[in-house]
Length: 356
Image 1 (tube, rainbow, N blue to C red):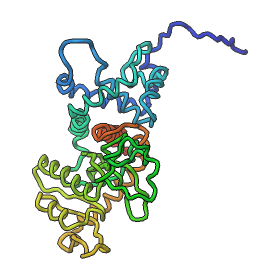
Image 2 (image 1 turned 180 degrees about the horizontal axis):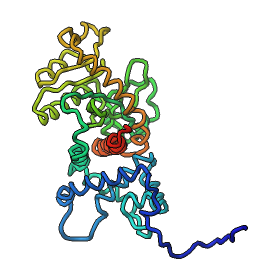
Image 3 (image 1 turned 180 degrees about the vertical axis):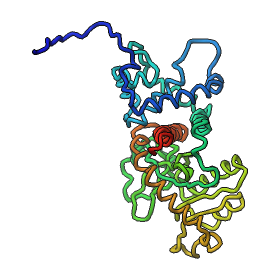
């Protein structure tokens, strides 16, 4: 028997958002873990807001919405809010009622600086990694470091002489442009940099991440200006902080770009064993000798580092970071940390279930 087609749906629905989301949906475990972290961060959130005045959008909802942007690769915050208006799954994850009013996309712009200044993204990462279920998954002595270029939201035409920022920037061909004399008019924090010989120069930032070798989770992240020494400086900064927390000697697996005598010496002085890949083609030879390579742990660190590159995959993270369309070191850093947090939130439930 053919059913009757009714063009107008019922005015009222007796199904809750909780009932509409399938019991086996992967976001259920992610949402539960996120809520537990938010409860632990209650005091951190309270410090950011005044006790009087007009109530703002809860930071828990803002962060949840930004995590959805990472999970689903939504290309802009405006499109994110458009989907939030009709996507019941998004409303359920954020904690917005089915008939609740969504907020304007500019709310993210106004609040991102507040969250960044309050170090909320790093605190979220710390709380997540110190969760009672997550902590046993982490290695406390073996880590890997890597860096990547993050393309800035700025064109080559915006890269103009510092003393002529009002120019149109069109006639830049056959002219030597340097970061010392030129600057982007739209994103002054970005730098012109090329990854290797024969590669094109781009306006970009440099992202750095530290992964632990046991479960391949991200434990630290940092955004810096793009230059030839940024990877090694950022690596030392992050690893020293981890070594101080662990209060023991740790190992650091790194690729050939980190094989310099200064960097290796700095790591050793900080109580960090440098398991750096040997760059035998470098002038003067590799800074890593038989004192390190003869140990079995060196080969294991290099194997773990390569596995992490496959599991984490910088290419997977670039899509959201490039689509975020934010400018400035602080804003790019917030998007970068959200990508690392999102990667952990997706991976942790799989590890706990034994399927990671």
